[in-house]
Image (tube, rainbow, N blue to C red):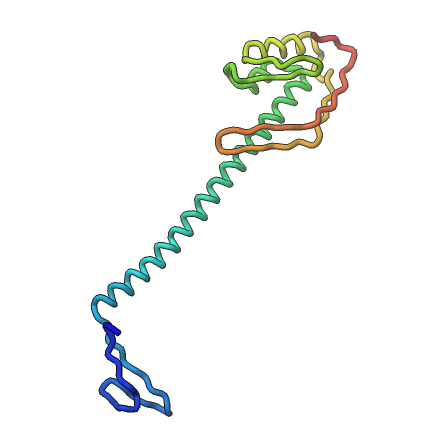
Length: 165
């Protein structure tokens, strides 16, 4: 073996001692072997650091998804509060901006684009007494990632005699 000085214990060679029937060898490492040992130790440290970094990145992603879910849950709560109270201004604050937003009101087709969506809410909420809509939601499910998310739920609604749209 390169880098080792070896001797058989029975030969009583220099560097070999025997105690109680056990032989031990003193091993001299070459500079190349010492370098290799340091590299292996460094590699093990690097692997441990890499594992920690991956764990931290996973935790960061989970926290961002949790933050996104909480933000979506908050927006959903604000939406239903605005809806229950017939508050058009609060409804406008909840909805996004752009042509990508859509709403599907019961019995109607999809309405797309902020201007059209807000016009539909104005028609519904105009002349509605605050609290006229009794809205209960169940089976709320939130899906979220760092960049987007959505809510699905079962909406049960009872309206009083007030007329909207």
